[in-house]
Length: 155
Image (cartoon, rainbow, N blue to C red; front, side):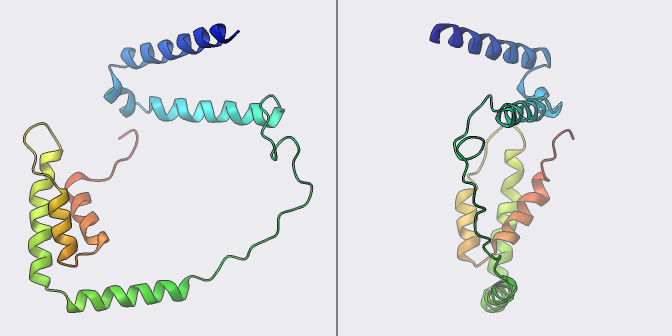
């Protein structure tokens, strides 16, 4: 029995690998949205099995608690957000702006090396330098986004 399950799993895995090769390899399969589609299809099929009871999840579709769980109110984070914005503003006022610019410029100059093949300057030391200069996570991310862009499936 276990051997038949293993064989069936192997056949499905080999079929998926053949499909990836048919699409031209992993990079082309990603660009074509193949993996996202497969994950979505698999998740949908799994959900159907759960809802039909074919797949049992204790506490979800079998032996579920009849009582509704207590409603936990969502806290108001607006004050926390205002306080954090104020702390960030204070840090930006007190930091050495020239040092922040210098470290972010160095990071921006090194980041294109990761877009293709070739020698690459490690980015982590440059990120650490930017953090030590009190650059924010948002500022660091903005530099990297400016160089690399934002991943969007199917583009």
